Image 1 (cartoon, helix red, strand yellow):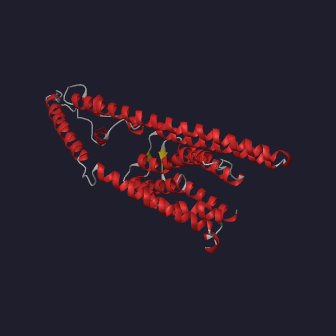
Image 2: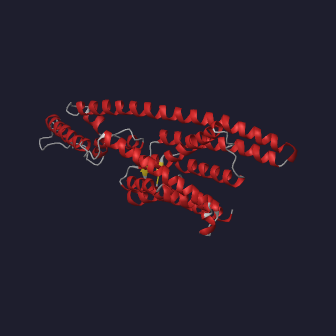
Image 3: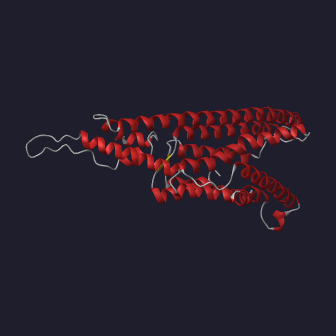
Length: 337
């Protein structure tokens, strides 16, 4: 998701809209969480590698690595819970602030001497994502003319400013009403029912998929097993999610596209993996976070590349192309492992 889906979405959005701006604080938080998950994988893996180099203490280090993986899994799950709490509280505060700022701006449009300061936002504010669509539209409008009349006096623009301000308020309110009026396809009850049906169906299909892999599907398809469950299955299994990210990127909504691609990666890294380890602990199954050296190195390198590409909060087709190239190189590597 982090390389293929996000890279493809960045290419699509970049070709359509050139440069797209992301919510920088949210982007940094997502990337830091991925870095934390990489650390959580490196530590048990490093312990397992160190133990395998000494046969006399191999069993001892294996038990310590298993215990360490379970402890790390608990901290990973706690980190994901804190991330959810932070996201919900931040979104709530942002909605309150944006509504207050929008109403304050609309209230000051008709008052003389304040329109230029409040309505004509700077390009820096737009890049920081601190203005709404009404402010963005105003950037393309010319500043009010201050040319002198034939008698040498400056025309009084207060009346026209007031009229234009009232018209802008009405137009802004109409645009907001149109955006708020969305067609409802499913009720809450219907959505919950369909969600349950789809979850049960996916669980059933997942069991079939796992059984086929255990029966030797990779050998039958003449594919390396690591390539099958690392490259092929994620692409096929998340096709609908990938399509959604592409659509939002094309519609110039990069934050949603980023959330779909990287958010799912965080969910797997900080929730799915530790929950599997903890469930194995309850079921007396020795599941740990020890991966092969190649897998650990590839995951860490991919996270570092994401951080380097997106730390400035800007997205374009060149950065997306670099992510896709990295994904292709990793895919080729898994073919030969």
